[in-house]
Image (cartoon, rainbow over all chains, first blue to last red; front, side, top):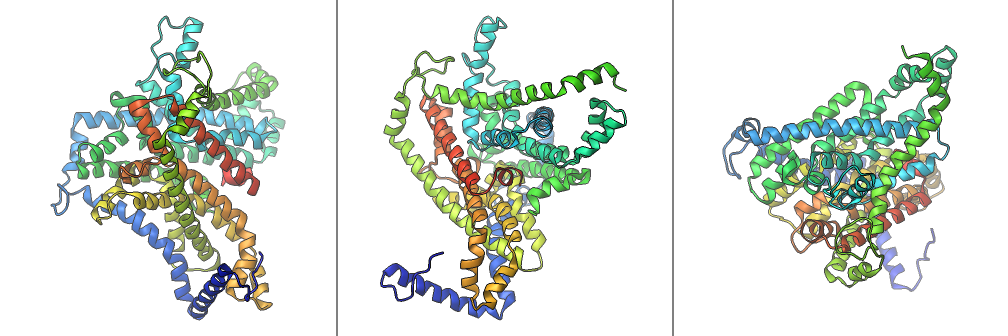
Length: 313
Length: 272
């Protein structure tokens, strides 16, 4: 760090030394007041999070039990509507089915990928990059990439026509399959990372020991590797299930109105129907699912995987 | 019990099968991106695979398109401001966490990571409700604030461990040698934690530049970021320019990751 001398004539350095003097006087004031120091340091980020994250969520919770925009009176009708209207029940059911299917697909593909990375491949750094780069590419771009492939005359049609599997181009846009593949595509890298971390952290000697004792590779996998990496698997499942349940971009772009998911209905309440309390109730239901998944994850031993993102140690 | 023949088969060929599967899955991840890049050079207006003719025409269209360029400018403005705020907040938070014990420390560390797990739609909706309620409404600064909330967990998850790895004795030594808090912070602590802080900033910028869902809810019509522009194009027009914008996003992602790796390492940014 280069330091400018205090008597330097330039205006910026004069400004900087004046700035430093101010900072020093503030620090001197705080030196004997450790409480004030901590409340400023921790307090500013805490205040921002409280004001623009916690409070909005609490406000939403409160609005979800109102019968209109405040001032309004207490009601549970918004929640009753969700569970008594056929349309919304179907939406909740479809969302649940898609979440289960997506999670299952991601676990199978992601675990396979992570297993080979950890056991068979020497170029793990390169492969980690190949996994993470698509994940860091814009979400909308990845959806558009899939639209390119799924739409009429896209890659899928091209391959099907070339192989003689189909006679006419049709594409698979706006189908359940399209949404399922889209969700799997976006969340696969996210789950692969915890799978890989748990596999890489496992003690390889355990596998050798199992083989020395006469177990074949499949039996070793089922009785040693899989149980040893259970926490990573549960962590990956939680990380995928949560955003899938709340998805709105993927079903909107790939599924359209034929494949409504909860996230789309929520969005609709705020952009077209303008029934904000009802939209809030739906959001609270999604949040309840999040809390449930997190509690389940921690109970099943994924606390470590989740808190590697949480506790930051 | 698994038949011995199957076990023997897997024992002999498992490695080859595993590697083949691994590269297949990686190919699945990359084929869509490769196709978008290829299609950005396609001459046709319609999305048909394979393209008949390759051209740079749509890149020129993109550069001549004022509203696209304006969206890029808005995106950069929002992301730079949000990243600066996020990095400052995450750094002072990390400093407090590393140096002091205070009530609510655990809760604060938990809450700072929560925006990652709550589905984007939920927070987006909660923010627009709340901004409406406190009469701030939607607009540029609402977008910036929402981006700070979106990026702060990622920055904190990189900067807090960096701060915890810093050897506090170094700062004590500097003070014993006559440095005051400011000198000790600027000349001893900052150079040590800078790689983590910059990596956190790069990650925050990348996420903010790509952010869509929060922005979608809290923006006004005047604040059109590039992802919003892209969304409108896809939903209402779908000109091949969309492929070009996709390539722009891809290049930004690659550039940011290359920078982040140059500063820290792959493991830290992926497995943290």
